[in-house]
Image 1: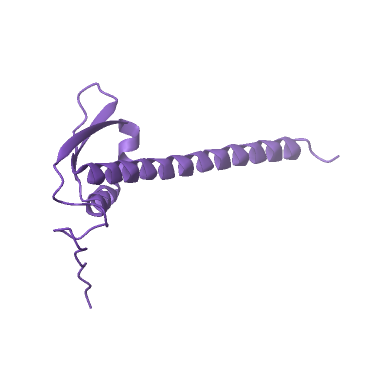
Image 2: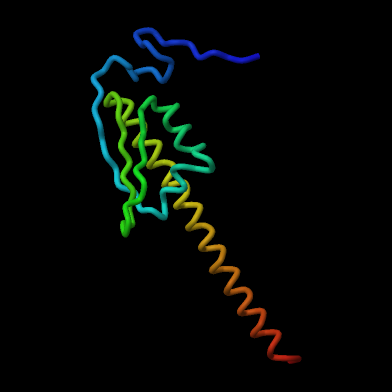
Length: 126
């Protein structure tokens, strides 16, 4: 059974309460480092499509300019749509960054354990 989202009162499209599709559209631009854009796009665009659907905003990610280390993201929609899209993009970036930092700590710990093990095993019998 497939569920169809209902349209909240005062809105013309399904979405989150308070995101009025009739508000005047505006545009906001973000700049994201190339090495972080993958966490925002997701595998086969899954994450950015989820952000588009949840926020109701139109989101375009420019191709990387030659020699540039950053990518331009253009968000278009009502102020509420843009605000929610920005929040979701930041949350996605933070989630990935925190996972990276935890992984980095685990690598550091593993490296110390391996070094300690090799130093102890290299000592022979005590």
